[in-house]
Length: 337
Ligand code: NAD
Figure (tube, rainbow, N blue to C red):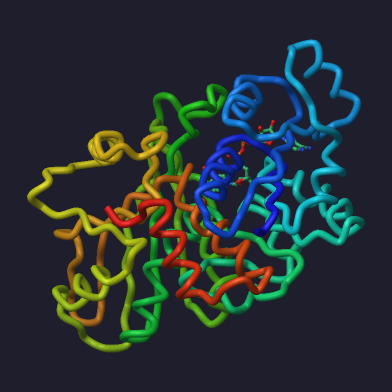
């Protein structure tokens, strides 16, 4: 059994912990938290051992009546691999600790690409991460773009990508984020940093991205234009995407007109936390004009990277190949709407 530590038990970390627990070849050694908030309480209720991420604050857990198993260093020492799901920039500060205990580490999209040996997306470059010590699971947006571009590159070749990312202002729990009544070009400079991030997965890709932020919390929306190397009928692209387990093609008959109904559908389907691990592509939006392909896709920022973290664990430990790992992760999590 692969022993997995989760350092940072927030939006991403708590979802990764639950997904790891579902895997037949993995166990959660424990999760590390900085403070005894509601997530610390639920971690214990779920049976995860709780470790103190900041030693000087360990007393706060005792004062709140929450039992601590030890300092984060013990957790890292005991684990075969650590998933660092701390806020942007903290992963970089933690790297020395992972090196000290010789524990391979996965970081999240908020960290710089040059912190790690490999930036990772399971569908696109699983093999690059095999036996790597420091791997970054790319951001929710980069994951969403990579999953679409990998099959398009393989099937037709891609000349140029242009994407406008309409981004949620904050996650539902991020009460300090915004805007609450505005539409922001964000970043206002063009192209945005998202394109170069996708190039950490496909280093020969020509991609320009533009970002916006809107008063929404549920999902991001991508408006995508891909110039292919050949003319392709839209129906062929739909068939290509239908074979990809992490791409959900929203059928017209479902009458899902936006991210509100998508989330409602996920909750009705009994998804934990209403999570949508798949890219949600409006099937009717898939259109071609000459060699240009167009589509709209919704990306659930809180959860699409979760199965990618599970696959990255197997990659760094050489525990399975891409096909085997993706199939196991999909089956255990129930991926494929
Ligand atoms: P979050 O704030 O929800 O969770 C981070 C957790 O780490 C919190 O519980 C926080 O208390 C804890 N923490 C802070 N300092 C710590 C430390 N020194 N040691 C251990 N834990 C510490 O953040 P998040 O949204 O889960 O983001 C985590 C990472 O995932 C970031 O790199 C982010 O860019 C990336 N990411 C976030 C999203 C998203 O939409 N939320 C999507 C994809 C990737």
